[in-house]
Length: 404
Image 1: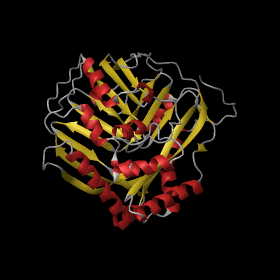
Image 2: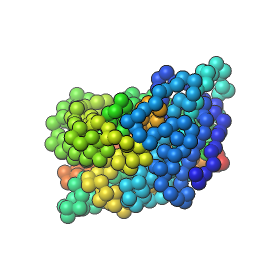
Image 3: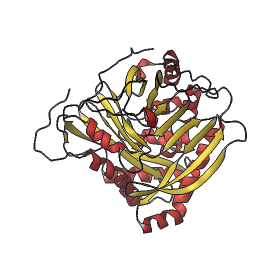
Image 4: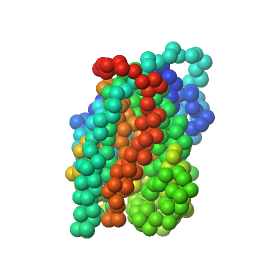
């Protein structure tokens, strides 16, 4: 390993990482940690699998799950950034990460008794105005560039993501925890590290492995959560075509790690609600191939097709060329690895903090039929609930000071 384990004190507020089993919530204690940055070199997927094995989670053959023991190692949180996922796919990582975060983090947890103490109130949280990574005009210019690439036959669809940041003071953990309680947050939770934290409100399953079955639930297609919005989403040829492209891409990704002929679409274009938005989701399943390990699983499914586009590698090239800042904690994966199952969400609807700023990201898939103004508005609609959840309870005119 290139970096030593770092065991940090529990935060003042008890938080759980996304997808922790319900029976273990509120009773986890950090046992060991490994973090990776590109300067460390090597294959982070292989390192992560080995690190987990060193701490009692043997994931070299996912067809042979172990039992979950209440009094032993519970499991681990796994975070993989969009840049690390692109590297696993053999693509350029894109622009530099705007947040000072590791690109991969694995945190192993053991069980402890639920805390009965009441922590002291955290320092007041406050952040200043958001600074956008690109203007609406720059965003629409990037959309036009993707449409031109589609016209040349280079891609069929590409996801474009924007970023915003704001300096802050106080303790960010309660604000990040609010994200995890947003309606529809299947992967709600917080992961903390030395000098950083990630809050997730994602509804999207990148990959779940349970009882010999692989499951992915891509989301593509968004409308306001009104009666008219639902009807518009269900009847939109553009949204359905965009969605089916990603379903086909995800079917192909699963086929690389599945038993031959076992990939099936159990549900196609189901409309579900996240906060004030309707979103279209499909459920794709397959039987796991013999001998599949965690590292090969990550290489097959990362990065998620719904946040890249199709074909995936060509879309990643355009993303690297057009997005002005890196995707950071967003558009990667964050979730839970237990001895008996894996449940990783795609880090859409995700925020991160480092020593200086709070960061959010949002975007959408661009096709030939995309309307630039509508795409800019959709990205804003996706980030609005995040910014509302992160808003300070009471505005103040305090000057921003470094938290380092």
